[in-house]
Length: 142
Image 1 (tube, rainbow, N blue to C red):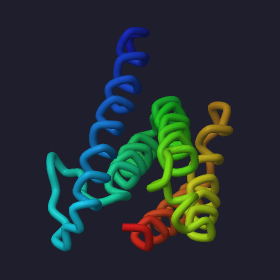
Image 2 (image 1 turned 180 degrees about the vertical axis):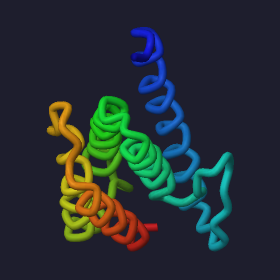
Image 3 (image 1 turned 60 degrees about the vertical axis):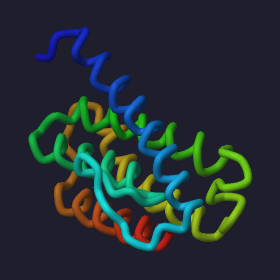
């Protein structure tokens, strides 16, 4: 079992890093950069931070750490809503509502089985499929 402070620190650090990556991604998308690079394994694209969080969530799930996967799933959902639904004029919900709704639904299908698992692992094949579909939807908004 993880030390209580570790369980708190990791999601906070991921959240802070996500906001930083989102800020960088937004700035580079405004600069209309056509080449998508990476920094520390995170795509420098509008959806790069969400993709990175999803990969961490899926990795935790694969390792059997449902608690960490559920925590990060909740972080992903909160960061997504804050930036892409209520994030101002550049938020995806304002620029392309249909695509926002599609990605939001795909994200929910991916994280809900993890956040509502209550200690019982969800079906691995379904989680993998939902994860892959979510990543595909994110590509449409990069």
